[in-house]
Image 1 (cartoon, rainbow, N blue to C red):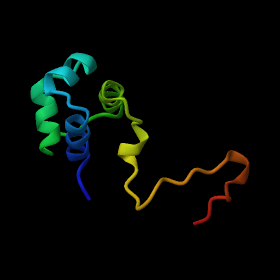
Image 2 (cartoon, rainbow, N blue to C red):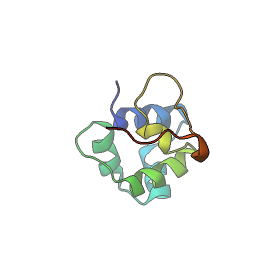
Image 3 (cartoon, one colour):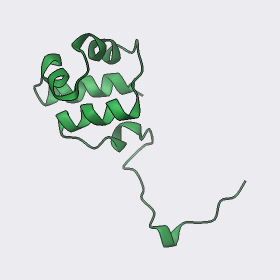
Image 4 (spheres, rainbow, N blue to C red):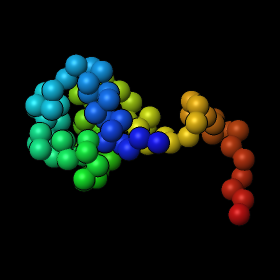
Length: 83
């Protein structure tokens, strides 16, 4: 499974954006973004959202690590929590 930074890099390149363009839109430095893409640093959820807004993607898709599309459950159809 690719790291979150690697997935961001893939998306950034797919969108044909430079580190500087993502930096300008998100407020994060290009050096931080580069280190993130290489897996050296972690990113907060707030900063992930800023980066995703610049790249026009949904931030929750970066947090999902399953196989296949994420499953959504309507509030009235959730099963009770079990240990």
